[in-house]
Length: 288
Image (cartoon, rainbow, N blue to C red; front, side, top):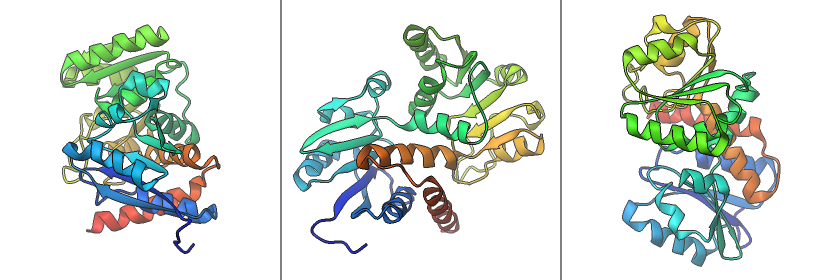
């Protein structure tokens, strides 16, 4: 669709941002939905987040995705944020309604939908979550209410323990925190139904890294690695070789993006179109 003075503008902000898959994914969704919209990417330094949000208001940008490292910082510049964002103290989606900015966090929803769309229902299951950072917190909030048991492992115990206590208070959830060590990973994975890597371990260029020794993986385990570059991480390869069910990190990216699309437009997101666009763009990024 040709860009004109009537075209609604959306964007993603982060630092760095040049390898973001969001423009390809969201523009494909807009085109498939026949919406007069375009989606851009802006590299915004941490010191300029407030100015970027002021610019969003001034320019009438209809919506933003917010990626690292700005998900926490952006909160203080918005007019309202939803309950999940308040708990997480992080926003990844901003909607502009006549100059009033509303913040949402679709990361956890994206993880939950990615699991369910790929035949994994976490309700009542023993879940092991590696990491306690921003992405891990979002995943934990999405899963804690329904999981039978949630074990959170983090290199530093304090963030994992703090997250566990918050989840217990909010959902009366069965959550246990551990310092991330080989023995703790081995012991937790041995009892787990679902393993989620919500750390950056295994991300390009460190594609040979993993927190889980291959022999600890098993056929009755489902494994999701939220890292999506490379498309197949070492953890994913090892899990597939062990006969485990594997969910790619691209799936979480797609479903959190689909949730953002729906918040902005009120339309159902064309998930298959977004998946194809994201995967095609990711293949190009990996070659660069």
